[in-house]
Image (cartoon, rainbow, N blue to C red; front, side):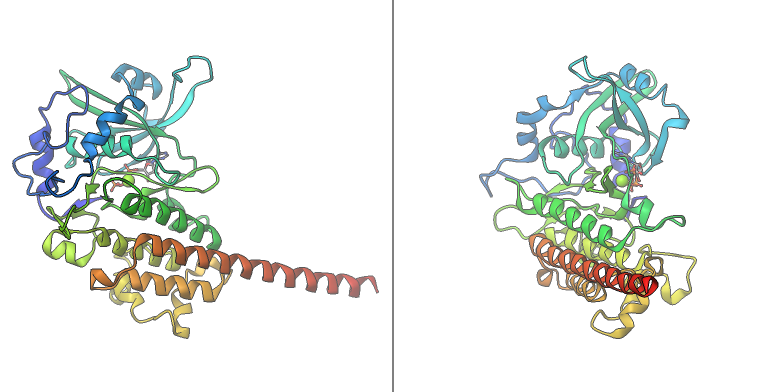
Length: 388
Ligand SMILES: Nc1ncnc2c1ncn2[C@@H]1O[C@H](COP(=O)(O)OP(=O)(O)OP(=O)(O)O)[C@@H](O)[C@H]1O
Ligand SMILES: [Mg+2]
């Protein structure tokens, strides 16, 4: 669950609770007085268009649902169809009628804003506008939204493509199953490609700000897609190096300079990516209160096991049962450390991270092929012995 390090979100959702638009208005209009954010990507600094401007061009791609349609889709938001719950509200599995009216019902995930919650309209609006603009195989697809205000207060919902295998968090920390090493790497590679697209592949730079294992959703083939753009921000333009904003995010993931100063940069996302790299290496959450004190904070604990030492093997997820390529794991550990450099400028760009992960995937796959080959050889030797 997200938490805000200041009262920013709380103020925001209160301010928005009596908003009554039926379509997402411009983000700048939606700013509340309590918002100290200075992310306006002013035209005087750059000729690139802003997210609200880009959104205007693409908004017709999103379907506008009525509350009735989404009630029908979820059997009245039936508890048995609830698949998750986060800071925004509950997520339901539902079925909607496709627009062509001919094919069968479409399975979707429907997120309903909890109006009692701390996060609110602004996040909903950011999600609609960012996801309405972006288009990448590693970013979740928003199919549409619902915005209705009635006697029962405001209703804000989001309708996404359904991701069969839920989130990376659900698998990584599961007590019943283990995610194989190669799958972990491929998921991180896809997630890195999604982040690189946000940072470098659009007309505007987008800082995602909420990278964490629960926001990496997995499709039927375990291909990753980033979800939750409620905290996303347009990056600095022109000569600016950062955007100043109230500090929000999830405890244990946010970059130290951002927590200390509120200065948000593209490199803050890179730090957070490094945290998740250590999660996939160790199979541990960023904070685990039930561990001995010295092991509770993942980043503090792993410092004692540098990737270029033999001790590194001691922190690798025991659930992998040694079924991983050690040298690739060491390289992923080194990559994590470079993402976690105190000096943000020394961190790699996300496209450099993508390249490093491609190499680690290749190294791991070659490692598994070698293991398979030697297993086949030894079993054929055993077989010939048997036949003798
Ligand atoms: N499109 C989707 N398809 C399938 N499952 C989804 C989808 N979106 C969300 N979920 C499920 O719902 C859960 C809750 O998601 P949600 O984003 O609301 O909360 P969170 O990520 O756990 O916390 P936070 O509010 O901090 O982001 C996810 O972990 C995932 O299991
Ligand atoms: Mg989430």
